[in-house]
Amino acid sequence: MESTGSTSITWYGHACIELVTPGGKTVLFDPWFGNPSSPRAPETVDRCDLMLVSHGHADHVGNAIQIASRTRPVWPAMHELTLWLSSNYSEPEALIGMNKGGTVEACGLRVTMTSADHSAGDWDAATIMPRYLGEPAGFVVELEDQSRIYFAGDTNVFGDMRLIRELYEPDLAILPIGGHYTMGPREAALAVELLGVQEVLPIHYGTFPALAGTPDQLRDELAARNLGDVRVHALQPGGTLRR
Image (cartoon, rainbow, N blue to C red; front, side, top):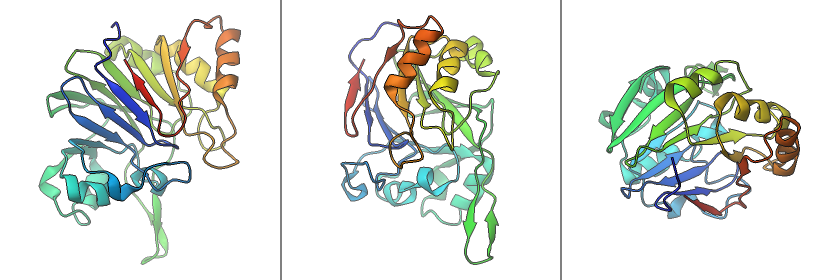
């Protein structure tokens, strides 16, 4: 779909994304505003209509409960994550448990949960054991103008990204490129090819030394696949893409 300029996507470092839709809804993805790259403190976030957390690692759940307790969004999430949240979040009635392949309507938007190739638990200091919070996931969000944003979450490239292309036809992919814990630029370039998108917003890089992938490396890898015409939106933390 052609860009209309009515959608804004702001990257606050790491995997923290704020999406404002053509209808004025605010969607937060993996809202760790406390990450070292973020120019915005979590206490300043005063609007969230829809909360989407890809998996249970602390650098993705981040400040989600803190922000949701103030803003009271609708919160679709992996089933097991909602079970844990229902005991730790003051507004459990706003939670929507779901799983991969499912689609829910929320805030006038369509949210589909997709697969991701990663892990998802956390450490439980009380039991001195890992806490299981369900499997990792990505999301395709269809906006009011029928454009579709794919937020991959933490993942490696996987062959079934071609099914995401066939089923949901995303217009823009938000992909991790840092490497080490997720795919790096080489794998992300293949993900772009499988997804068939013409626009990509790289995230999950530069936060820590281990996340060494860069947007320029992604451009080089895309060019090596004859995909040099794909637009790589390399934002600085706090920067906004309008489309």
